Image 1 (cartoon, rainbow, N blue to C red):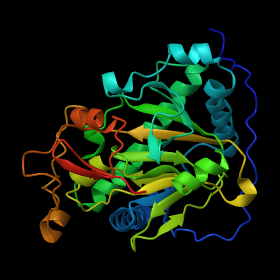
Image 2: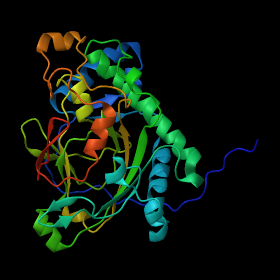
Image 3: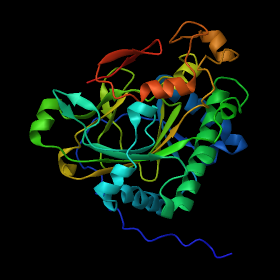
Image 4: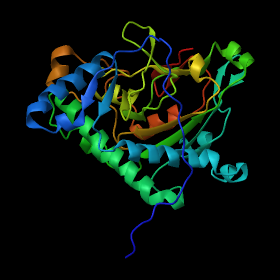
Length: 342
């Protein structure tokens, strides 16, 4: 059979990292290559456990893709935004309110930010059955993220709870997991003033884990353990991993949902379009997000529940509830208080 020849796509050229002096978050770095060695595994388990417990965030290096492969992924990520007509985008527009999923194209101005100003973010969210000409590469990329990255992290986090290392892997099957590309556009000075430079309100993801491929334009901030907003620094060819609400519920509150937001980039990067590559990981739809109470760690420190015992939502219901566009700063979803930070 003939070998697959990747389609030619335009290069996505990112700017240089900011040279401005910013208050950067101090995030742990997890080395997956070291985690796969007998002598390094225990050390990486401890680092991953403590980072997720204290901040809900860490970097990952040696994730299995080299710099050229990641650059190719960013080239592919630009295709839905740079090489697809508005008419064709409309065909694939996600029916978010009706279906409770972001699968497909999300146009600009879907989320309300502040004072009547809506977002300037478009994204294309898909599983492995979309974007036909580039499908073989996208399929492999999604599989790599789920199997080689997320599953490896889940093993470290399960061991951090002193559970069998496949505990989280077993409830995160590959089916129906998805990947997303996101593009942020510059805004007018008046919109920046009305929103106090916030592009996307502070929030926690509804996932178990979110994987972000680090890119040079600084705009992501996390709400740190001391409740101060700090910038997430770009690390070349690294991943930024954050804990979502679903993992916080499964871990009985031991692993903390990471509150984060997107704001206007520093002055030396303003006016540039910002391209993001994400992998959003969910537990299987039929998993109830009850704490993993067999954990010896939870037995020692206690369980912090988001709902009454036995009343936690199932993953599918939680995912659909959280995909609604909601404008409230604080709301109740499936009996759980969800807060947005502006």
